[in-house]
Length: 288
Image 1 (cartoon, rainbow, N blue to C red):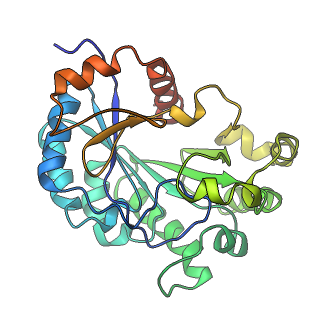
Image 2 (cartoon, rainbow, N blue to C red):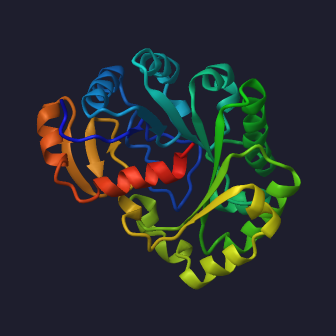
């Protein structure tokens, strides 16, 4: 029996992405897809720490060819599933996702122009499709499974904060089928977010100014969470297993699945001061 309990294990399922967002701390083309061998070891580890949920993140998780098999393997072990995605490729897996996932987190950072500024694409896709396709896919998911929960995820930065209130107006007027909207103040974490900090850093006063412009009618009927960068533990709010099995919280490495035993990793984790933040964040973000 494990001496720790973490409800959710985040899997860095791939570093590849169809976007090249400058503020991103996840996409990195030098990190390949997670293999089936590592994935199965991750499931073993998740069971040993009494996790109930697997969260697929990246990169863009849907780009890993293992995705469909990975979903079935996790469900066969009784895990609940969460997917974080930019929403472009949801249509290719619509039935599988609608049938097997509890929550889908879809990222949009504003209306057409603002979203395109924040989220430049690597492939040939119009700015309009970058915005409208994820919305069409979230609606299709809700039609197939009205019980699936949609989290709209938006990063607020110096580049787009002034456009977000207009996006809020759109969300309300078009009645987007979301269960929750979480707006994250830009933070410097890793990868390119460190390089472009000066461009994207958003002072707290402007983050608060943006919040105050949200339609009160939207706030009354839709749960909107504003996560500021000064929240304690904000950069360490998940236990993430990288594509190579390396387990990391914030920038601290606690071991590597397939190299260290699960018992060694658990022993390293049990004294981590941020475990409380992980559970708190997941409860707040994905509470029923």
